[in-house]
Length: 111
Length: 116
Image (cartoon, rainbow over all chains, first blue to last red; front, side, top):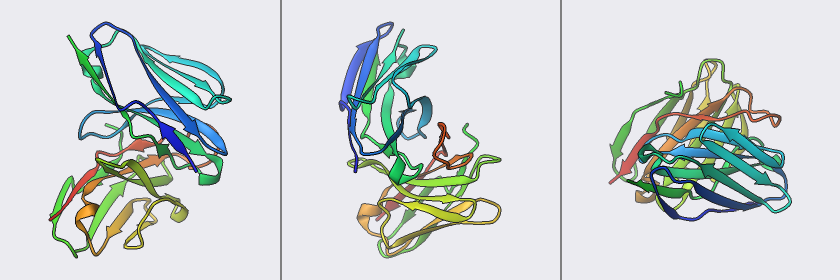
């Protein structure tokens, strides 16, 4: 089975940097995804990590350590529109290609 | 816009009733996934279809069933509805549904089901 933990809420100010952590426990890790979800809308794909290290994509970066069961999403130069829920999801070999989601971190960005 | 469409957008019904939710995947995607999102549980995987065949089941109740048709659209059927079934139901599609590579899932806008 899986256990995915993320902080429930975070706050930050415009222009700042924020790091959202995710820890997971799984017996057959096969990739970790980050999605962004604005209230009442569909989750949208942000990043994918399957090997250890940092993946950078514009203002967003995601890091993975498989030995520690740990990932983080780094958001730079925060904008008001980044206020959303950020979902960490893990794919397990034995579960096929379905994603197992954490409960998400609600980020509030203020001016 | 992800290219995944879902109908209806909203659905209000009574306990004990049956409803059907519809999903059309992105052009070229063979896999369809169904997820349920409630306030207390977060996004929960229900079922995965690949090219018409069931591939995996998650936390799907026996009262719920799904199928994927030859044109690759999918329907999720919910029966004997209970108050606790009120939630957002998302479908997502991906190209393959294979275990290699990211095979990113793209989500539709969801159907908000309210059971009164």
